Amino acid sequence: MKIRIFLSTLVLIGLMTSCEKDFLETKPTRQTATTDAFSTTKNAWAAVNGIHRYMYSQIFGSQPQGGQSGNMLYMDIYGEDLVFPNVANSGLQNEYKWIANTNPNTASNLYNYGFYYAIIGNANMIIANIDGAVGDQKDKDAIKAQALTYRAWSYFNLVQMFGKRFVAGQANSDLGVPLVLAPTTEPAARNTVAEVYAQVDKDINEAIGLFTSANYTRPNKSNFNINVAKGIKARIALVKQDWATAAQMAKEARTGFPLMSAADYTKGFNDYGNAEWLWGSRIISAETNYFYSFFAYMSVNFNSTAIRATPKVIFSVLYNKMSDTDIRKTLFDPTGKNTADFPLPTTAYTRPPYLHKKFKVTDPASSIGDVPYMRAAELYLIEAEALAAQGKDSDAATVLRELVVTRDPAYVKSTKTGDALLEEIRVQRRIELWGEGFRFYDLKRTNSKLDRRGGNHNASFTNGVMEVEPGDKRWQLPIPQGEIERTNGLVVQNPL
Image 1 (cartoon, rainbow, N blue to C red):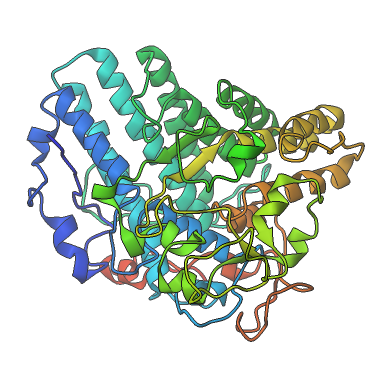
Image 2 (cartoon, one colour):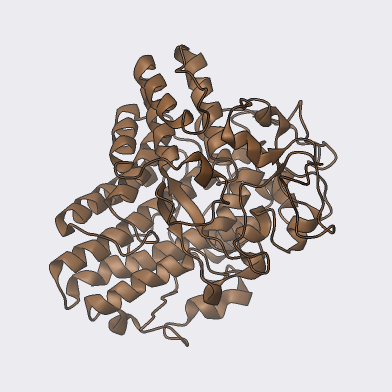
């Protein structure tokens, strides 16, 4: 039995009338009533699998919004390392131009808000009902751990987008997002940033404890396990500048996940069977989203207008920071003329300078490709950054070298210290995680300036947005206007 639960949550009512039916019916076609869903652990596992499927589903009406990959696209296009070589295709332009983050009616803000609250609503249903299910206690623990991890991860993403950045040692009393911790349709006011992070910490810690007690072995990498939960905890700690926890959790999370070989690095980032991947979505032909998929926007070889007309390219400034002996540099063509190493399906495809081939579909006739959510490389980078932030420069440089030497065999352990070492680590993070959805989050958490100058960004394509200072109000995305209206102003808007 395949059960998908998309029950209503307070934020989804009235947000988007075109998808209202999907969210508000308690037992529509292919779904199940709450009592049926949680009568047994077998049914509850099906509910968990429904959330896994939601991670790559076509949910709302805009093509970039194909599950978590929608957020990945938005968070990178807001940054400087992903470049539009032209504006022949309109997809993602409002985000690239920093227009969307001033407009509460923009589809991407609705999506980023509604997508995570839909996951939270489903997680809340599981958390509220699983203890009464018939089945083994270890199954109950593992199911609850999955739901708690989803809730922690969802609130973590939401508060980073819609709240101000967390600053260690300060009150963090500015508004974050509403905490909804039980199945309900009642409106709730926004909690503070500090309160949201406290709940995120509580949920992820409880999930780690339950994964431990359940001694859970997952069936595939679309499921969470203790490694992924610890990896998420490492991400949270990094944002909170809790350096010791970030370093420890990152090291523990990556245990058992070796870094990929140089040969594997060039295969297209489309297979979660890669030993380095901790977490991702497996996409099969029966469930492909075609033009709604991550690869319909970020691959080099799928037949979509977004790729044919306006392929995404790397920021030339970042490209120039890579060593000539770095395998990652071979994934980009600075000339736009390298037809031998960068073959395109037809001559209809635009071939701009700095074209990438990092992401490739397995079959150009479809958009099939597994979507990466967490890799061991990220965890090395978290550990290195957290060690450097504690002043443990030699240890940080050692961890950084363990990663980079697998990409660049000529790399020598860094002798930099202090801020210079931190900058080197962060540049390596930009190179390694290019296109994987981290850049807006990283700029915000490090209180860094957006700087698109000096390279291949064109100010006429960016709406003139080439620099944005840290602390600018646009680093907080607007709450969707439908949520403000539905709650009669109980949920208040960010400064516009």
